[in-house]
Image (cartoon, rainbow, N blue to C red):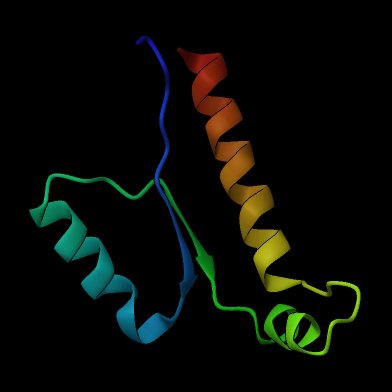
Length: 74
């Protein structure tokens, strides 16, 4: 198929991050990036307000930058 696939874990909290990475590695999976749980984003969804986010957006910007860098290096 010649397609690149990235695995991104979403809504990750500090107390489960290491466990998540270890358990997925046991299955032969690699998590390429994690998006931390963002209370601000979650609350704005529940309130049906325009989405607000600092943590999740920051994490996604970092992951996208990492993917683009890897793509340019290949």
